Figure 1 (cartoon, one colour):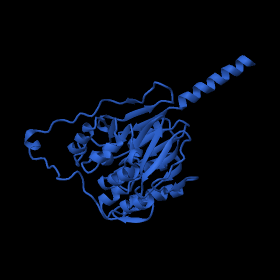
Figure 2 (cartoon, helix red, strand yellow):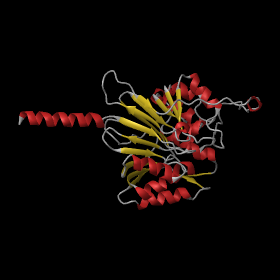
Figure 3 (tube, helix red, strand yellow):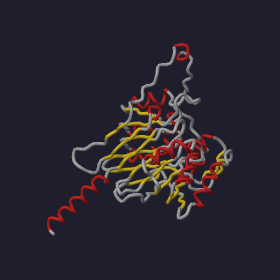
Figure 4 (cartoon, one colour):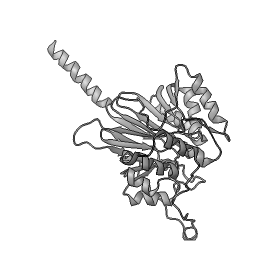
Length: 322
């Protein structure tokens, strides 16, 4: 009996150690965002769903997923919420995390929220900046930005700045997910959270736009790895050279979903083991033709500063700068 008990204990310990790894998949969904996370306790998280249902459904079914414990919509832009409609149609969802931003130019986001409300057993949450989300007792998940009070957003910048920004921390490793938050929010978070922003891996804001991933912000985050989610040949020109240059200047290794889904594995706490990034290949921007390169517009400032942003006001109110 003693030997049998010892064998069972060993098998249980081995199984526990295998599950104690945290896995992040930056999913290739084209010009949009979707990140799938497997937590050490066996639960899972999906942040956004991309611009269409097929890519994220295919990815999740290939992973054998039937239930998603936590679905987060960063903000109501179609390249983030459309894929989530298919997720609610095809998978069981236990918790939905949303902002109270109302995009007056979109109706599909409300349809998604109706699906979440109708999902059997699913609870909807509206987290505030400073909140910690109880996903896994071994993983700290902190909310750094969100429009947690109702607001009608009138333009893309206001919508982007309402992004639900979260930071995961596990085994000494920070993982920062920016949604489409732009410079005004980055600057405020830099003042409010300071060294609490430091992260090994940065999911770059707004698909690598020049209006995000600013110099002061990167000085706080100090990323070793930056992942950009964008579509090949997209009409926005993402990622922009200015953002790439700023990331390179702080020594970050850059990866992009234009090369396929990128994966990051954080091992269980064990001395001498570091995070492992697996993907296709680092991002390598192609040089622009001389005729284009010579006339590329370089903005005189790093990014626009929206002094009247509803999101900025809510962030400062929720977590006053110290």
